[in-house]
Amino acid sequence: MGRAMAAATGDDLKSSWPEVVGWDGFTAMIKIKADRMDVYIELHTVGDAVAPGEDDHRVRLFGDRVTGLVAETPVVG
Image (cartoon, rainbow, N blue to C red; front, side, top):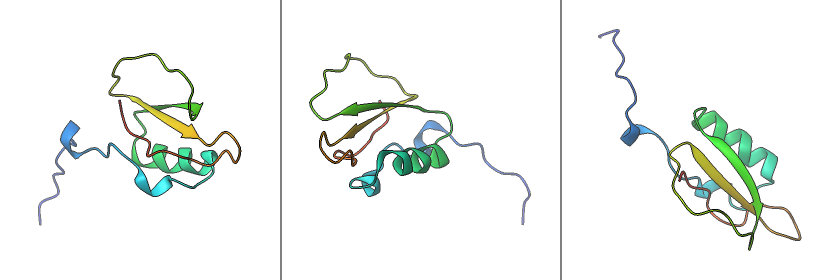
């Protein structure tokens, strides 16, 4: 069994977290950072206006305005 490990490429990195929909924002952030330490997380409420543009190191986390629970699947971009 070889000891060399292949370096992760962009295609190997997780880019969405549908499993965190319905979670509280703090727990969702912990999960996302556990999977992708290279991203930063922006917190928003559903309906917030956000600046356009893509960023391969950004995840926007949208929470429900009333409950604060994650309301949309967070994705890198």
